[in-house]
Image (cartoon, rainbow, N blue to C red; front, side, top):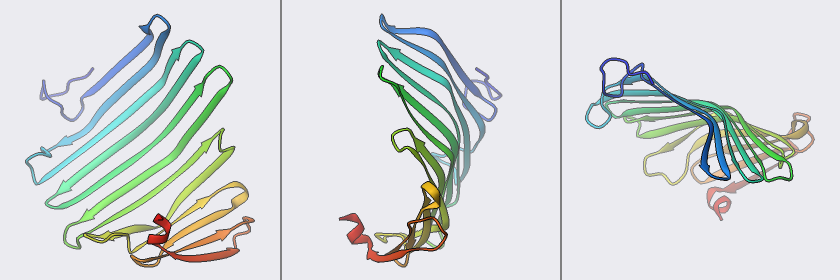
Length: 212
């Protein structure tokens, strides 16, 4: 561990790490790998100050759990940043994750790559904005789906649904589903079934119908 000044309290430059080397949880269970937490930026006190920032990095390095015939594996790294400035706020999360499980019959793996989540709140406009980009792949899925925000989602305070925003999911052979918010009541789904870049059909529906 690293305890940067001021000593004895969480502050910028602090770091915590733990490693496991065949640590036994019980006679038939072991854990290997490591965990690292880096406190990149800590300014202000989120409980009392009008302005503050927290930026933390996490790494899970080949963490492996074994119990009898079952083995679980996790590897990933991500960064979280949160800021607050007199009512305005922002949060971001970026990272990569891989998980695998083998119950004795073979490995089942899932991976989340290129994750980028951004959220912000504008106190004067009284609205929040959010976007997300990522690629998810798994052996169960048999491929990958890429999620791309085309236009950030925006929702007013007190509104039941966002009134703006668009996201596209891209699957095998370039097939796509594009979800577009028309207003806080209606949305449109555009589908490209063959991946030729041209939508084959569109459906306009309501948030209410989607939630049913």
